[in-house]
Image (cartoon, rainbow, N blue to C red; front, side):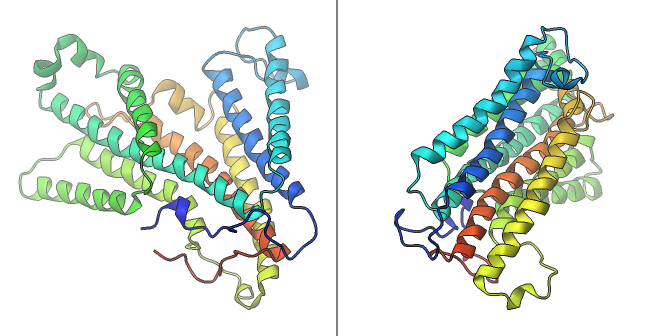
Length: 344
């Protein structure tokens, strides 16, 4: 499978002649501003619910989060302004960059995020499975001692001192790899299902963590691969008129779809999921939520976070897609046939 950061065609020369005399700067500025504001939103979400800052809501008459001074609300609001300024400065310093080059750059950033997420679910899933197996078989205490074995039975400890370092390790691994590994993750899901079948029907052995691992990996496969599917033109189109459009009209359709349907949907997911302490993404992560099965995997809170990863990766890819679509509208060289999936 071709890596996400190598499949998008790019103009070889940043000063290449385009089919339009209009400057691409406004579109590039708009795209980078969306990404910058999203980053500020995620940072403020962390500051609100993990560090106890009041958030920006009190400035507009909303409820105060935590007990810190309202002055922090203005600081947090300033983060959004700073994000917008940085987006403008970045585009201003890179004016010769074309829309296709920017789309490629953003797609590369997204590829790194998805690679890190892939390695995280792989490593965390395997390590947590080993811990749960040793616990259910009564072998963990003999290996790590009674105190640590007891701590590993608490979700806050396992999440903070086992999962988080493994996620950090995954980010490092992602920096040195170039493939996404969705094929391998799909194979691992099948292998995990096969182990359940063999264990149940041949050895009469089945534990909760085995099914949890399948759900954990399958959820990651479905949500993390969405941005890759978008880039590979693997999503399903139901518009019977699209195939007959020329390149520029397809660009208009893709640009409007990215903006009105794609990016807006991702914002809805982020706002609903992270709009408050008890919302569907924040609440499980804050409490390190687990399943009711005592010897299952302690990863349910991470599965809630998958929704956030999905929204962030899809929004990033939609911004890249938007820039590529506008480049098609402008008649810039280096485009791709949207009716044919990228080569593998």
